Length: 304
Image 1 (tube, rainbow, N blue to C red):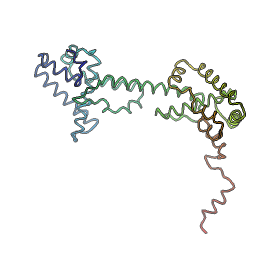
Image 2: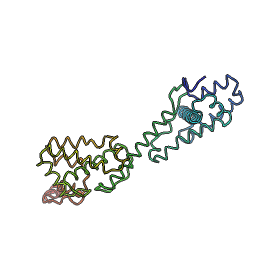
Image 3: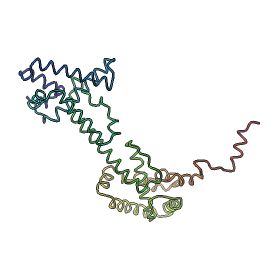
Image 4: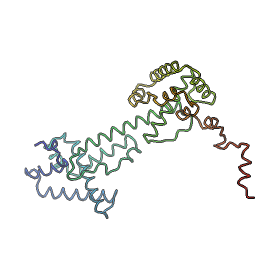
């Protein structure tokens, strides 16, 4: 009987039921196992939820069930007989610890990523047919992709960051900032600069180049710059950038093709220092320009 393939209930419940039916588990063993399940559920509720609310205790039971399922399936190779042997010889607590070890393994990807994964993610209802191992595999894959993104961001920002890099692990934020860094890298190559960061002169040179050069010539050079940039990257970085479409530069190319309001749109997609941004906006000293109109502003604020 290949219970692991049927999955009309969580695997461990089917194994226990099958083991009891064929006499592999005694009534006494099953009673002890149920007591251990209750104890673990109360412990989870006490440490992570609440033992006061019934729905919290129910959720704790489902978390325990999910962890046991994950641990058992990771050790039995979908074999019902092997699963029964593990439960009988190692015990149900062993299965829970094995599942918890899988869950805790997410810390190896990133402590921040681990914190984002709620324990309740692993909860399995008593009538659930979902495969907890597939869920865990997806979480691992997502975490590893996020780690790749963070690693690539760190390496690219080490070269092209114009401002102090604030540690951040949010995937959308990292992708957005990484694209700006890549845009700047290509933009600097377009003006044949050997520098990695824009100053006001290089920015002006870029705007002049994009505004006065034939569009076809610009786009041809753009493609060549992207190709050269990609070839100069480490293989792992190049493959990641290609896989995530970060080297398509859709927004950058759209702005170039439009050839309108370049001084308005180009700064929004580049990595520019605070000083350069302030200069572009005629705004110095932390956002205050000390203009001639200040006296009028002050006079307006003074009471009559």
